[in-house]
Image 1 (cartoon, rainbow, N blue to C red):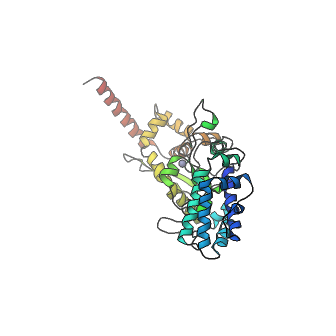
Image 2: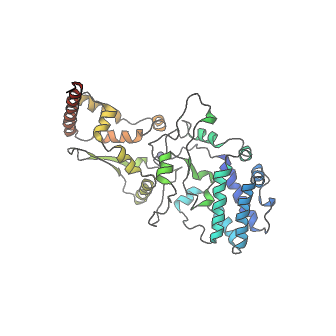
Image 3: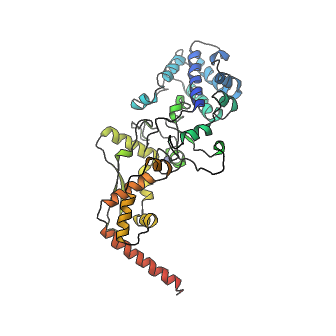
Length: 364
Ligand SMILES: [Zn+2]
């Protein structure tokens, strides 16, 4: 994450209860040979799981596969899930091959149940009633409140989570999709773990991250990742501007730490969300940025506006406005370099543009 999540971030109650119910079910299954109502809690969430036929069938599918597997598979699965509930510890010491002890059919049934719990139960009325009536839109509104996380994606700082529409009741506002930090295909037991689900912008979630594994690179090498509630990248980033005399100066994102552990996590964050390429893509034309953000009258105006834009934004602005973290870094870098070659060029380009404009206006 560019910014860690706020300490007062609410956890979604439906996920908390679904996660507890799954744990309870696995525990009860250890000593039972029969799939029945006794495997579920006597709470409303237990009723909701048992009474909803597709959900009950997914639980039964896992139970039967576990029955057919080795004797101690049920116990091992319960132990794996119960001993990995603290995600902060899990991020410090990730277990990458949690389910190797299970047969393929068992793994498939586990995935199928957990995916179902996330995708197909959280919006059903009995599950929401069992969780004090707060649905996922209600949770999202609480998550993005300005005194909590705000409406800017914590992973990238580049996009709003969701557009806010005036005149639309809170419950009908659009919401962002929730990202599984630990993807549900590789870590199914965290599919409804309340600490594992973070609303992200659509570029981070759908275009960049998809089902990438935080703890394993696509080439198979192991890696670590920032834990979203306590760690963040924002203090380790520099913007570098090179080749100012060239037709197109080069703008690069660099890490400003020597700490190997943090460097590794920065690289993971960059690979997962494609941070550098997105920032360097946005900043591909310094000339266009100066024109769009400043539109300077002369070199003195330009220098004074760069120094304005280099001032640190408030916490509130960072939570409301897209890209503001990155533009401030860029203007900080601009403030510190000798800008004269670029001013000459900018004046030159501007004059050319005006001549071109006059040429068009004259109709010649
Ligand atoms: Zn994002």
